Length: 191
Image 1 (cartoon, one colour):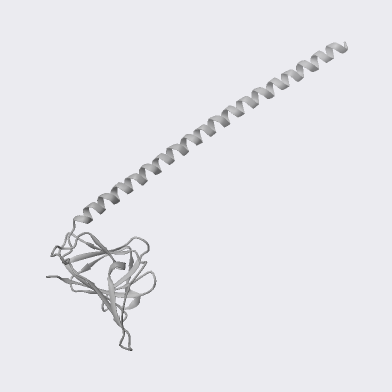
Image 2 (cartoon, one colour; image 1 turned 30 degrees about the vertical axis):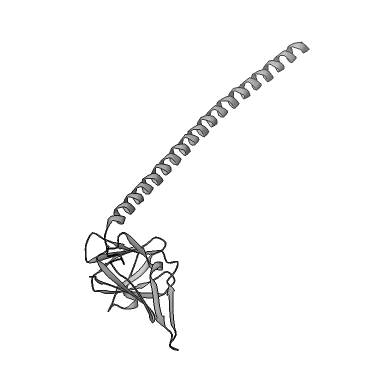
């Protein structure tokens, strides 16, 4: 009789262990399926992000290729405080300037009240002056941060904050840079 109770207890324990093993197997399989499903979703999302980055890169390269062919038809005059600088649409060799021109490549000239001349560049603004397909327009673009722009005659608080804007011929614009410095820009017909 004692061995019969031992056998029944052993069979009940074996049944419980088998049931526990089966439940553990089912749970681990469903977890594995979920984790493989999540892994598949993560791979798919990473692939989509990579394709989007490649598309944006191709689009940017195409825009740069098109921009490099556009020709400046207007000269620029820039003032910053008591200093001024400019950019001619015609290069020294007689060819028209093409593509874009960074603001930090325009040399500014000024004269101190003591009479001493000085030169400098407006640096680290990531502002580009870009040629357009229209002869009496120039595009100004910022790659880093938006800038505030307004036409002459508007109050300081009436400007628009943009990443790019079109400058039209013979209109004076005021641009407040990221550094809070204000420059004025006028585009006019070159030679």
